[in-house]
Length: 164
Image (cartoon, rainbow, N blue to C red; front, side, top):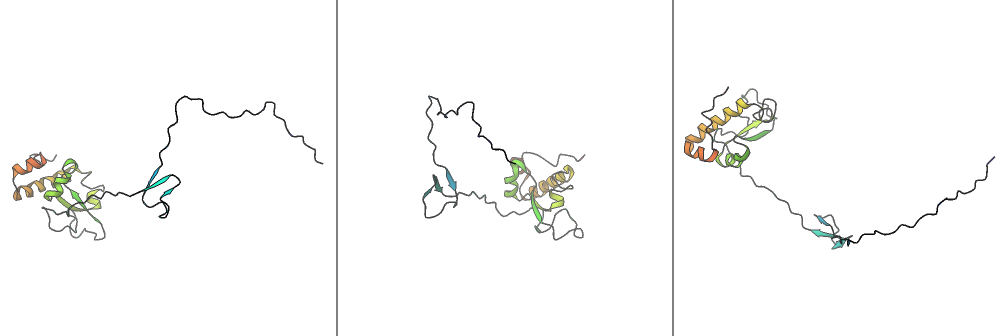
């Protein structure tokens, strides 16, 4: 048996929503721009969106070479019998940070496998290997150029630092 229900009545009437009471003028919104070809070609302006050209910045790096080794296809630190030829070679700039571009320009780079570059035994985590590479590169650099030019470019003598 169903009871007949009576619709509920509100105790207070609903109030109409009023507009904003601010004296400041609302700024008109400028249409949004979309980069690339996300808009249809036949419609120049679509839902307030304007078409713009997509700008892509590509940093061109010169082909890297090394003054330490001639073979840029195998890891400089791996011995030939340990080399896994499926490993990807990564080019390591010996003098990194603010001197990275100078390292590329003067050939102060070496090819390293992932294990010796960014792995647990890598030059970025092992200060002894990092210093040894910097000293070896300084020796080779000074054979080609001179000690004065090395000091002008890299501002530090790594041969005077002892490992310890």
